Amino acid sequence: MQLLLMLVGLGCGFLANAQTDSAPASEHNMQMDHMAGMKFDTTGLVMNANASELPINCDRISQEHSFTVHLGTEYADKFPGHVFGMSQNEYHVAPCSVVTITIVNEDQVRHQWMLHGLPRYLYPQGMFHLEAAGGETQTGSFIVPGDDQTYLVHCDMTQHMEKGMKAQLIVGNGSGDLWSIPGISRGFNLQEINNILGVLLVFSMGAMSYMTLLYLKK
Image (cartoon, rainbow, N blue to C red; front, side):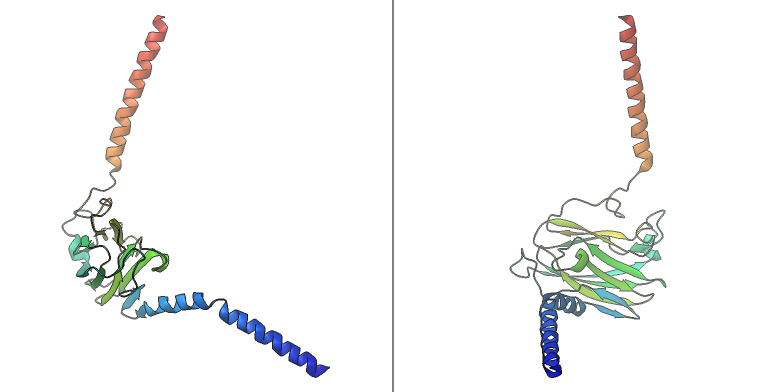
């Protein structure tokens, strides 16, 4: 009887392990693929690199683009009020192309080159991410989809984007400039909005006063 119970237990354990091994196989493969596109050491980080797997709206690699981007306080000098900067704030690439980015960090603090909005089925969190420690260099590649789109590029270290580290990558004809790209587009100007609201307020008060006078004359 004990032998029978042991055999039943072993059989149940085997079935449970088989189900466990087979069920998350695709998830495990996705994790392995993600790790294959990731490099992390004391010099920095490369995350979600991909130079071979095509987006679903691409049937082939159209072109190859390479950019070397220098990061540091030196590149903020021409933009008053900025502390950090990039040597290039706009990139033009063809749809379905491989884009290779090399970042050279000229500061002694960590900087990033992070792109958002890529398809999540291919890039976890829709992101491609390079990060370099002070004085270090990192390189990685990704493939853009086949549609016209403008993607946000920035440094996600605390306050670095707000202090000037922001750019845009334009695929094909793009989808319009992003706001507050140094040297490219205007920022969010609170003073201008306040001025517009002030004019609207004065106009509204004048209209209300006029309508009140017309009502009293009746």
